[in-house]
Length: 95
Image 1: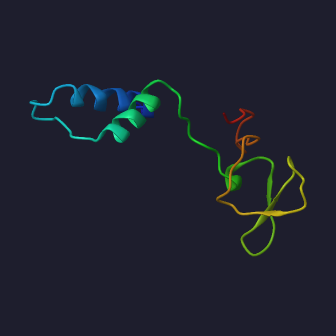
Image 2 (image 1 turned 120 degrees about the horizontal axis):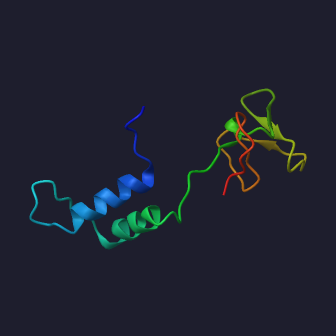
């Protein structure tokens, strides 16, 4: 979508709404939620790449697979993730 906003833009917009408590669009969050929004807005938190979307992952049987990057001999769950992840559709490493 051409008008799609990234998570950092959304978090910044939400923080602006928090700073205007008497606005019609104000939202109420606790300090933990506000802290999380600040970390997202500052780019400190990033989306992970799950094993089933990783180029190192090979699907095997029973819904599990094997990670060729780590090569530890253990099966990986498709919902697992690690810092070696690389999207199947590109060569960008995950942070």
